Image 1 (cartoon, rainbow, N blue to C red):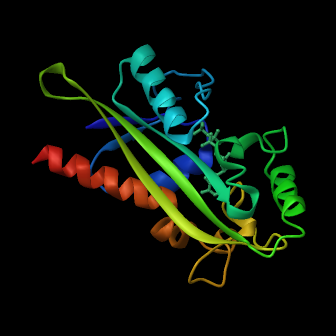
Image 2: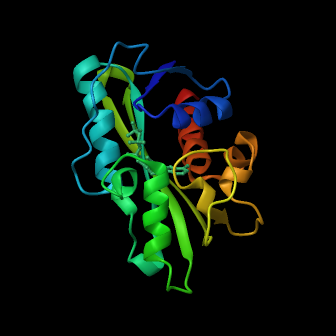
Length: 197
Ligand code: ITT
């Protein structure tokens, strides 16, 4: 089965293809000739995830999945949340990180989590359209300064619970074994295998 991953984020693409077994063949937006900016205007992570997958299904007729994700910081009332990509006003990880650190500078509660919601739109048997969502969450802490050079986005300031390294100090395999994205992907793969039986 061929599935398009509806993302323009090369890091997400690398992480997912690195974890993928033989459940399906991954196609990129480039592969299907989609150069459009995907809509993300719903105001929620699950809504944006659905919008992105629906866009590819509607305009390209391809079974696909999308990932919308974000960092939720308790002491910032869940910010940056759905605004994670543009938290500083720019799609700039360094500036986004600095804004989180600035806003947390007088806070002792550093608890945070990465959340992702995958939306799968599947052209099923008898042309029935199946749409499912799969959530992945990983809990952790925000450090006081960035550490590491791997990963992307907020990885240099996020240390998952039970580890003494940030996501940016882990290899792609290590992050890929425990991350929010890996958890959602595992749920989606289990669902796809169930459908195949
Ligand atoms: P697509 O919409 O094209 O998939 P995007 O980068 O715009 O790519 P999102 O809308 O889901 O993705 O934005 C999520 C932002 O949250 C992303 O740009 C990062 O800043 C951050 N983020 C998401 N997952 C992350 C991860 O695993 N590690 C670090 N930061 C992450």
